[in-house]
Image (tube, rainbow, N blue to C red):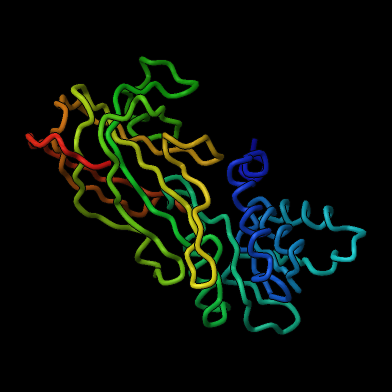
Length: 297
């Protein structure tokens, strides 16, 4: 199943976006909307249905064809239009210089792996009107320690191979060994290109005695503007599964911890020069015993 089909078959994200568009349909009425990436076509179609005067899609032409077929023969079929080409090469049709709203399913695994982050930033700086909306615009990245994890569709004896130091998978809530730590808040309304990559410290307390085999990265998605503010969905282990998976970083050597023990360290995310839209991670840590039993989630 390709990405666009996986998105359309994900009831969690689809229902979240549907509620947003239906609840705040007044924001779209008679507005010009740009769908950056048109990954599933769902956001374009919803924008048309709630009253946008024009919806322009860039990126996935297969999904754009889906939207055109869905609107074919209706009184709204002329509202939607797709443009083929990279975001840096295209021009808006009809001499348009600005758009009122940017929509995009821009997030990838761990937010930035295979994401459209830079495409949205480019479109925002070039075409979005002052005070215009980006939907969704906020993604908050977290990490937590996990116990033994056997990836879906993998043999257990393959886990320690070099190829499986990092993978995308679903982690169960009972595998969580620590409280989660907030690594980064990304707000596309104010972010710049350099914010895509980062490094910094982390600290988290162990929930119980045991062995930490790795760390899981996950994130929450939301919309936060003056006119609209609401959570959409989560990619966390405690949330229902979505088309996006969590990112698991395995440790070379497992880490023994006691309940309430503090795990501190640093993590960095950088561009993978050998893979377009790919990322690389660095990770280091230490443990510090913490005697207090009053720890927050």
